[in-house]
Amino acid sequence: MSGHSSYVPKSGIERWLDVRLPIVRLMHDSAVSYPTPRNLNYFWTFGGILTFMLVAQIVTGIILAMHYTPQSTLAFNSVEHIMRDVNYGWLLRYLHANGASMFFVAVYVHIFRGLYYGSYKAPREVLWILGVVIFLLMMATAFMGYVLPWGQMSFWGATVITNLFSALPVIGETIVTFLWGGYSVDNPTLNRFFSLHYLLPFMIFGVVILHIWALHVVGQNNPTGVEVKNVAKDTVPFTPYATIKDIFAMVVFTIVFSWFVFYQPNFMGHADNYIPANPAVTPSHIVPEWYFLPFYAILRAIPDKLGGVVAMGSAIVVLAFLPWIDTSKVRSMSYRPIARQLFWAFVAVCIGLGYLGAMPAEGGYVTASQIFTVLYFGFFVALFIIGLFERPQALPNSIADSVLDTLKGGSGARLATATASEPNAKG
Image 1 (cartoon, rainbow, N blue to C red):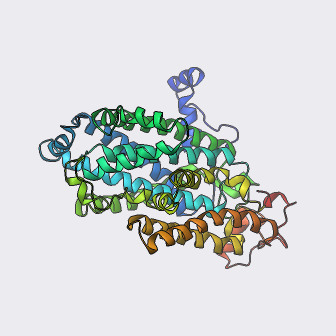
Image 2 (image 1 turned 180 degrees about the vertical axis):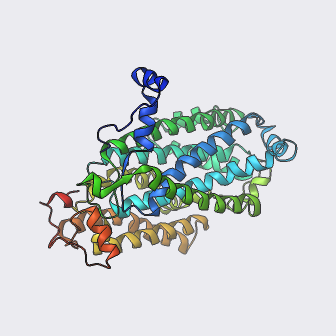
Image 3 (image 1 turned 45 degrees about the vertical axis):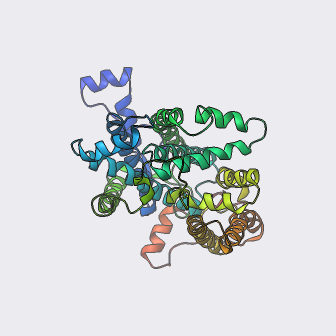
């Protein structure tokens, strides 16, 4: 997709370095001259926002780790020490805690954008799977980070979630004992989680590099789902066109992020986590952070413990198989009327599961969770079936035509039909 390098060293030092370590050429080809589809909308800026948030989380996390004490009798007080005694410790703590939530806001937008525009279809299967791996690593990192303040919700959240592994046959109890470092959640557990919480972001960073590498090999998808045919007409250089758009979106995102940090720093947290962990007192309602709630609802919807764990895991893993589940030859749901309605129904189901995950596991909430769980997995079944018979709308001849079509109010060139045999309709 990126084609032949257009980088030309301008100085003797650049030429000398380019022969031995062409890192400047790599940066130029990846972030300056890289051909970007000219019809990308602002949903494509969330990749840059996620990179920014990852770096912000790593930087604030490293500084916080310098003042944190991973010891069960001292952890809670060390967090209070950071908030009260460390210079700008309150700011670092709020940036990191709210940064986790904003990170998940961005990643959910990124995932749903990929779903809507078919960014998981060939030749981007590996790119999509790497994205799912990043999502799983993010969830593991966030969960372990939530345990570190060692408040009531931290302690009991760790107890409930780690206990789920005991449902696994043969190896379940061994995994739980290893995670706990004993026979209950205690100091060894906190030490393990602190070590892994520190390590996993660097693993995420490594997979992100692979994710970006895979993106630059196959090229970016676009709202039409039509591949680049003419680089000169269909694309623009990444800098300044995409760069300016990314920076603007990042500034807007940072303003929203800052509002939470400075005006509502505890809005997305739980009040019980300001109570020191007490193994003798169980909170009346144990809930994870908001970004886990849809999967928590699926877990509780199944009355069998092992079944709930399998269902919750499957709800995430099934995303990796989307390139083969979706049988349509057209990528973008903008041209798939039935699939488009199905997508928005799926969004509503996910929001509904999030609400149900925050409610007590009793009465009608459990029944509703079971119904919504069936609807969640039903989306993927329906996507497979619909792709076999759905008649998509006509696709534009090229990306350039789609831009002209938008500018002219729909009078641009169109294909008569969108068939699987045509190159621009292939998945």
